[in-house]
Image (cartoon, rainbow, N blue to C red; front, top):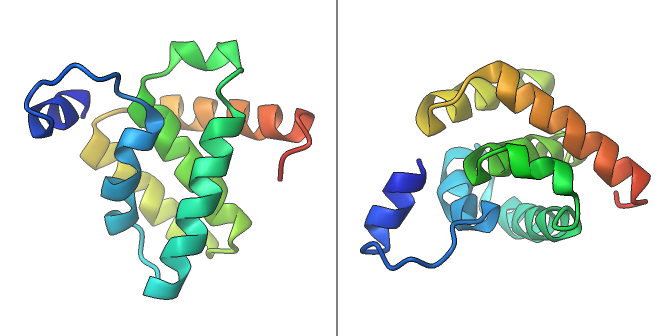
Length: 118
């Protein structure tokens, strides 16, 4: 997935971060237009809150982005079915396994809970 982002940027070597995937993921998540703004704001807040967590360096930006997406969807009360289908879709499109996504998601949950963020 990182190569796709770099190709779209014409290989201008700006760093690829989890925020680089936000617009792509928003198009994939089934929600009405009015919820896109809320999702976007929560997504950015969570990613920025996680910048200082050194444990996340073990994960690619696309995995972090997908895990943050699941965290935000859970916060916004998307149904469990939507979370599962979104998890499967993210793993398929971004080309990584569910175990890696789940491990990153658990780390993010712990990190945000310890940091007193939502």
